[in-house]
Length: 247
Image 1 (cartoon, rainbow, N blue to C red):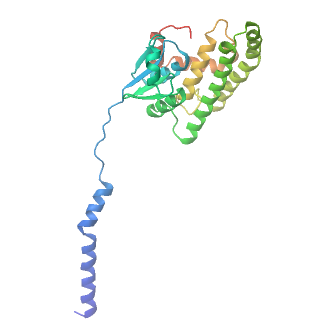
Image 2: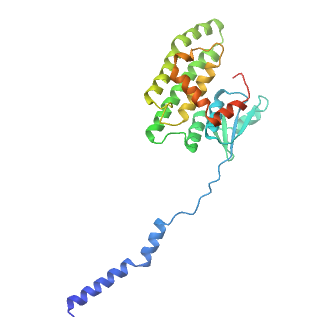
Image 3: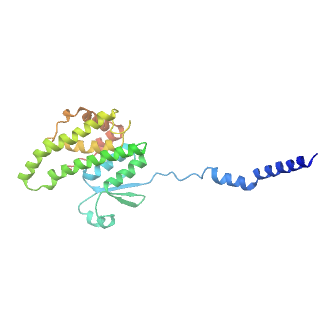
């Protein structure tokens, strides 16, 4: 039994004591124990918008695509003045989430798409979805300019010719090319996303006009996509029960 052996024995004991120190155990518990279960109750949703499709319809379609219940509060022109000061920016649509109000169609749709798994599976897919949503908004603004903002009938007729001959082929061509490039029947990834819902809503609105400003048969992939989205069970059920409005 040498002095070296005696020292080694003490060193081993010290090492064992350090490893089994209660402080180390508590540290491990703090870092690796599973958290207490969170409240997974789904929020309550109340959409405030006029009794029209307009800028509120794409939000309704997001709810429909997700199969998520919500209160569709269709505000009359008479009731709007009382609600207006309660909205963030004095405008609709405005979505109440557990009583807290959120404004702006884009912000609302992005929030809901993320909540419902309609916003891509990666940062790149999210960016591609945003890109298409922005493209749809550009097409929408071109539509509003000619169909709703121009009051002079002669000028409106002139703008409508340009819209049919230039704007519609441009944007519908983009939609067709994007579907061809992705190759899945959806605009991004291999399942429905916010991009599909935005395109579906605008193309449906334009193609339902009499006459339509474009021939949907000239864009076979877009036509197929419209049928695909409109046939999704939850969207099909929503459309079947949707109240008819002029806008």
